[in-house]
Image (cartoon, rainbow, N blue to C red):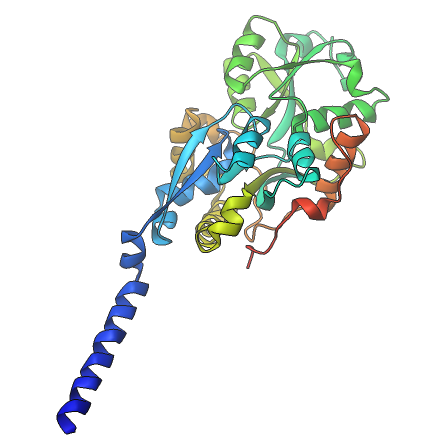
Length: 331
């Protein structure tokens, strides 16, 4: 009997050791799960890049597979199909329309806010138009060509808000859709008069001498802080891979705290951003930083205003903003 008890005790110790090893960080790393992410090269994606480069995803047993897109709007079909599990971009009319039609993906966390001192998402105007005095206020852009990334995105909303502030509408300007790199060339050839940019592209325009910062969201009367960037999870990721989705968020929020504390002036962060945006670190260090909420908290009221504006301008169906959110990962 004593010998049998000894065998049972040894078996329990072996079982406990197996469980401990299975739960260890090294075991988690050995069983790394790949997460497919749709990216837009921007400073507000810093927390994602930091989590990759500093090994925060690896600590959580996650590998983030990054694919670049021209705009957040172009990621929506891939999210619907489950080809992407995470999207880093902005809320869009297309996203809200898909939610209205019962698409299961959701906005899950903050990725960058524009507020006083953090005007990283801003209107830029061609330098010669400003220097000559032809453009002194947004009203002077009536009838002129303004580049944004895509129809129905956050830039569309913000240009509209700036137009409304001076008694115009979004239809009083001519919008053209260009990716950020193409906007540099368009400014150089004077094919556009203005562009709504997200850093580090505004800093890049200034460095090239083609355009200058003109107006930031916090300068628009009555607008308040704006939820520019968001993290979006696909329905498949939320429902079928929830433990992985939580681990991904844990790593992301750890990196968000680092970025919130150090910002773009930090040499290590600037170097990481250079790697992913292809904009020189010295330019990134002159760029306006986004406000990054270290806990991932969203500006829900502003997201509701964005959805209402898209509806009012005929770009989407009316929705309740709560149907587009899942805040359960922000623990």
